[in-house]
Image 1: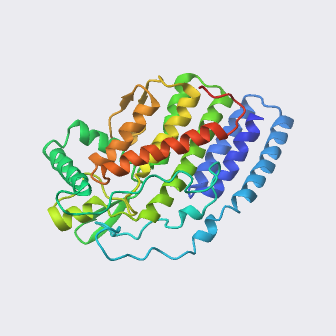
Image 2: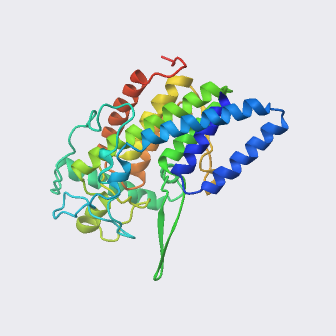
Image 3: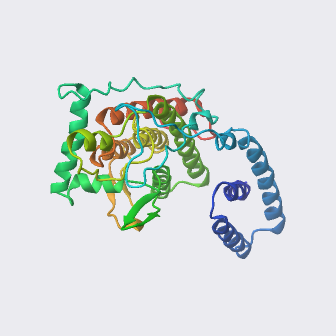
Length: 348
């Protein structure tokens, strides 16, 4: 049964990623190893056949999630006015996935099931609550510029998780790829399951619950983003406070409210806490391959809180998007925890 599950996963992976040859190489190496360890040929054949059936069933179901249809939907049309999101430097990319809320959720009943409270009105008078939050981003950014190797800068870099970083060198523009926010939390599953000595069922349970939480949390967050269409701090700071100011991190190409990292990190942390408990200390090694030092946490929830505030340190989110993003992720995570039934009991 374990082999059937792995085969179904690998089969589906080939349909959903670009690096198909890497999956094939991993699969062939794994099956060769099983042969060398003496797996009976009949067991292997039956397991692979069952895995094929499961993969085909899931693929047919996935093809009805409305993702393909959204590829043909119109792009976002930029709106006039200070309140609305505008493309940001250096590439001024179009807004990503304005129709993401049309994709079928896995556990949530509908995308806006846990809609956060409305963002603060975009009021640029210096006495307004919004301006105070805008100025906070500006001031934190300036503070970090004076201490580029400090703790806040390290936190921002560690949780950057920008899978498509744009660079400009003279007239040339190019991009480099790093781990994504979801990929970072999937790697935390790997770290936790190894540290806990989880067996195959518990490990698969952890990956399943976290990835489902990520899936629905992203849909929930993107529904909010493209309904509120809140402008990024960089746009207003450059226009009204300091035209030379730059955020510590590159501003992502989509609206600001709520903070995606805050939503998905909290939902993921709740899923992991349900399996491994609230006081699970671990060392996060996810960013080693990108030359960043490890960070230590006393719990998954603490890690999610640091991931959330990193967006303020990075200069790409207001405090309201972080705090309400955490609340949104908490609601999504709790709902999935209570309504997703898996074979293993969850820690309360």
